[in-house]
Image 1 (cartoon, one colour):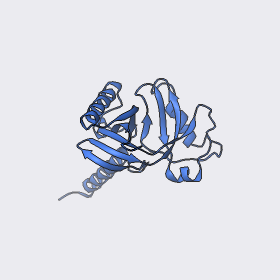
Image 2: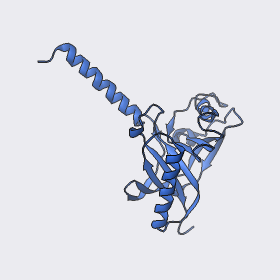
Image 3: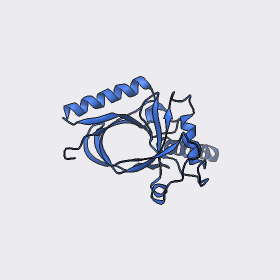
Image 4: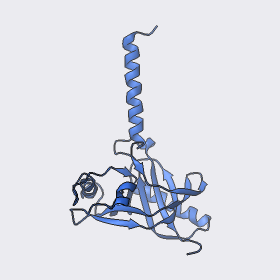
Length: 195
């Protein structure tokens, strides 16, 4: 028969694990909407509605402060001193340099987003569009990410889908999430058959 101390210990451990898993999978964050049009294993074709992003340039990922510029914006460094909820995914146009963006919550975008106080940060509307995507796990790594982008481009060619623009990388988890539990994606825009 289990002792009360052992039962309490087990209950605390289960509580910690469930909280940890919820945090790792980003369950508490609003996520960008999309509709799956086609699925092939880890590959998908998705339709995304128009969305409002807050963006800044990234010179050297993790070392240039670009993430923190966006984080300060949602923490209230904007013309309304408005705190804005974090969402997923964080979007990057390159694995080391390019542009990094947060998706603004739908309610904030609909009401009209506050203007950034930092001139390096801007609000951008990304038009609705169809994208091919490939989901993968692991830590943010340039070599792995670029290999996944090549895999996605090869798949679009096999499917006879025309693409345009550069791949966009999407990251859904907090930085402390173990690699095997991370949701990462690479997306590339598809050219509509009937523009």
